[in-house]
Amino acid sequence: MSLLYLLDLIGTAAFAASGAWLGVRRHMDLFGVLVLGLVTAVGGGTLRDLLLGDMPTFSLRNETYLYVAILAALIVFINRERFNFFEKPLLYLDAIGLGIFVVIGTTKALDFNLGFLGAVMMGVMTGTAGGVIRDVLANQIPLILRREIYASACLLGGILLVILEQSDVARPIAALLAATTVTVVRLLAIYYDWSLPRS
Amino acid sequence: MSLLYLLDLIGTAAFAASGAWLGVRRHMDLFGVLVLGLVTAVGGGTLRDLLLGDMPTFSLRNETYLYVAILAALIVFINRERFNFFEKPLLYLDAIGLGIFVVIGTTKALDFNLGFLGAVMMGVMTGTAGGVIRDVLANQIPLILRREIYASACLLGGILLVILEQSDVARPIAALLAATTVTVVRLLAIYYDWSLPRS
Amino acid sequence: MSLLYLLDLIGTAAFAASGAWLGVRRHMDLFGVLVLGLVTAVGGGTLRDLLLGDMPTFSLRNETYLYVAILAALIVFINRERFNFFEKPLLYLDAIGLGIFVVIGTTKALDFNLGFLGAVMMGVMTGTAGGVIRDVLANQIPLILRREIYASACLLGGILLVILEQSDVARPIAALLAATTVTVVRLLAIYYDWSLPRS
Image (tube, chains in turn purple, orange, blue):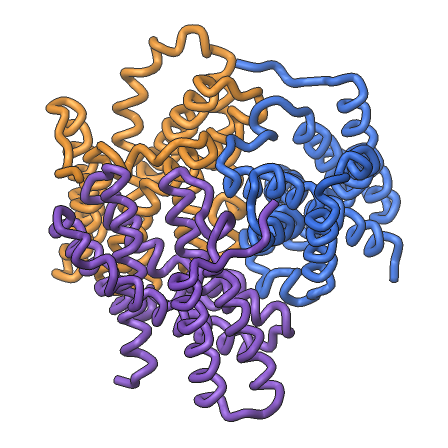
């Protein structure tokens, strides 16, 4: 198992946990919590696969993603009374997962011969669309549209990756730099409470 | 016309009626009521077809589903003042449709060589995603995520079907048993007011 | 560049501006405003391409649509304090775009051999689904389901186009008549404040 795949699964678990936790806070039943965990974890990559036309979508071809997401959501549901122990480490795992997701989405789009903007969009979408679907199902305006720098971290990483690829930098190096950028900017944004101009 | 197809169309009409009825209660205009009926009736199967990669989606290849759904929604709109006469029988037809939808979705996923979890998910999604889209359009947290055993009935039926298929039980028998399980559990859940553990 | 393509891009810009403007009114940050502009502009055509199975979806194959939409949304964001100067002309451009979108969606569906109802639905969806996704992301019941004749204009145009095509009228003429019908009915509906029967 490659390091990338391991980090991908860790990110999947972290995303699923964040989705499940919103389900718990919204007083959903067990099924609802599992669904919210699942869509948060695999929603972004699924939407990317649909738009690119690569079906059955990734988690239907490799069900490991589904099992990991359901397991993580189940753990959150069972431990819902003591979730504050999880919250801080989860934020770090979530930031790592975000970097991996953006890199996977952007490189896949490049392999499908998308242009600059399309490739960046697929990367950002892989990292963020799961959370958007989660928020829509929980009946709230997606967090990412309102007050987080979350998306900008993805944008930066995606743009960097496409530029490096087009400059013939070897993919492993380009991927590592881009993923690290996303994760670090994300963590700095949390730490310093950065935000975008608002209307 | 096979019995399965007939029950499928009856389920389509029942789902469309339930969607249309939510549209009426939300004071939508005629177009909104028809759209809510349509998405409730064909939304689950459409999402399944997208994720599996079987396009144009089923109701675009056989428009009978579209005509049945629109007709059912129209009948609800016209008779909206006396809908309480419909409500009880609709619940039974809805439960029958649910069983058929789950069986159709699960077997189709197996035919696309999906694994255990993926096939069950496609079955559950075929039975429930239309209602989720309906609720999202009506701006409410999907009912199924909050307080119904609806999803568990689908899960049970889907799991039973995959196990039976993998045990080489003939498909018609497996399908009949699974559909009956979904419908009966669903009706029992309504009758005894069962629910899942909540957070 | 054909006239149709030019009008298509103008419609894209007008739709993006209307989406961005809702994002501004909902106090979204810059990223949220751009996303709302994008989904409003390309959401309908993207959903149509998914349902027909024509991927990568249109705006990933021709990124001009993405650039135009982002540019229009950006202009709205920058000029958000004086948007009332834009509002009236935008309504006209939006009506023109609506006609073009419906015609493009309907003819594409006919080229994919869809039947009458499916082709009309694809046309209506190309014109309206972007606005539906916009409203779902902004956490409100889609405007089109509640109190506008917007959808009826699309329906009329789509039906007219399919009938004309099936009567062997040359496509450019059929398209022109249908697009004009949508735009004129839409403008008349605004002017006379028409609405559908409500529940």
